Length: 178
Image 1: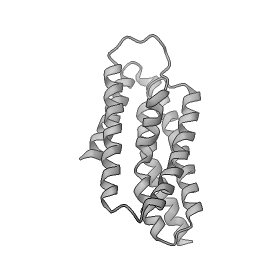
Image 2: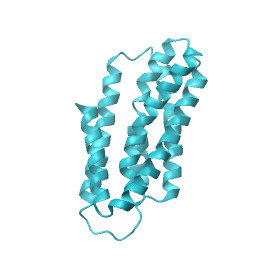
Image 3: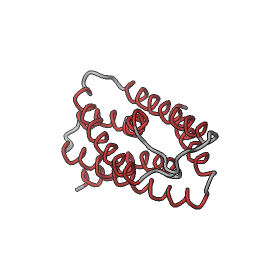
Image 4: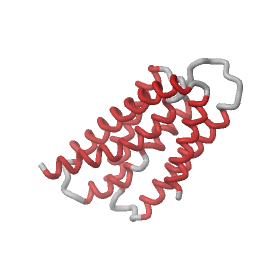
């Protein structure tokens, strides 16, 4: 029971990263189709990354945790900077499409911190299947929640929501880097 509660708390902690980032992106007019797909992709990445970490845990040292956090920070900052600069350009569409390379970078950037968690789980006698299923489920649900709350806040804030969303992403990226 103690192991299950620890896994649930760890799952929520890893999913909160996805929540905070999707909150910032959700302030833009993101289509519900992309909200659904992004939540699913992030859930899958939160299953894949710790699984990969478990497989490579014996080969990689503790420095991988710093690398993963740094790489995720740079990806978030890049996505945020793009969003901030894009907020100053003329818009032709009402809805923002989270697609292409941006879709995959977003999913990877919020999931990469679960990679080093796989190291510790691989070295422990934790129930791996429950752990990675929990990581995937909570990150997916928290991503959807962040997008939906962000959509509501974006509708209230109007034109400034895209600038605020990009600024949040930049701040999260810089926080991860430093």
